[in-house]
Length: 366
Image (cartoon, rainbow, N blue to C red; front, side, top):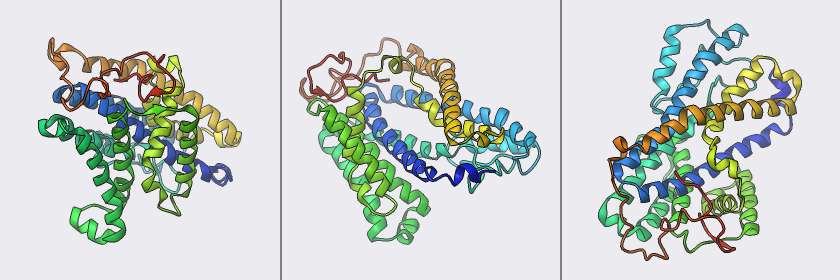
């Protein structure tokens, strides 16, 4: 049944676009999370990051167990029947991002995937959260914070060393030295430089100007480099190009609805299980275009509900005086930055700045 979709000639290209979306996500995250770290105390920063990632993610796990699992059993896409022990094990394995379990009840099976997976997208969240932790010493150790213009570029260069070590020391040596699977070494070499590229752009955002045409060209170049990634290593040296393109284009496009309805995370965690459910209910017979349309409509709707009733309330809780400390003031900018050079000093200004704009002005930060 899955062959009708899986063998479609355009599907392979979607994997490329999926990789590109993850790359772009990490660039944007590096930019925005650096802003959060810069303007928050250490405790407040950690609480914000936990409440941004986990509540929405936990509900997506329950979504799979409560809806996806039963549908897979009823439609014959589970390898076993309903099993409470397996359902609880799925929750226990996934709740902390450390040892993800992708199948539930041995499925879904007979779908357009080589392996049973209920949410293959969330593999990157472990690396995302670890990136949050890596910013702690950079922004909260006084000596380092006073010299961010040295240490964030240094962190970016160090993140590139994963790739160099993998290439020149070999995966066997790296696996033994760090106790990591080659898959983790590859992911680290890919994700950390993307994240720190975004953080690096944030650091110098008061001096970087946004040219919409140049941003669009950088985005197009990022797609091309991602396309080459399986066959060449050019992607490892183009993170800053991709980061500038994605963030700059975001600054150039003003979508007011998206400023108050951030469904991006919900789309990220629900698109995969929603598509699996659609396939199990017979959507393959409708063709590729109809599958994409249905998945988009349903995923956007669920993501909006997740934003309104889970993620947004959790973020509001992160700003509560009980969490942040009553009447606590934001920390002062590092003394090495002048007022004109400080990225966060004018980050809340309206988008109606001069063209080309300083990077980051129109973005709503959390």
